[in-house]
Length: 75
Image (cartoon, rainbow, N blue to C red; front, top):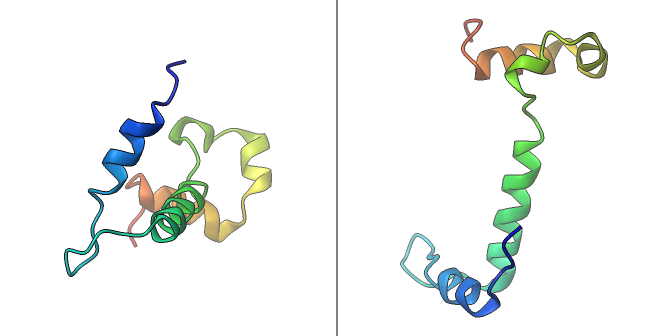
């Protein structure tokens, strides 16, 4: 695994801007990344949706949500 160059990471983070073009604060970037990670956990791998153990973890709404995400059912 490649190590993270903290200076390079910091230089890239200052490029993130809000709707007005102002740089995002560290806290704003942190909240944004947390939201992205949380949203990513809503989706299951397409090939796992038919797995019995995965289906047992999902509610009917979550299963339909994932199927819509992959385009298997109409919204």
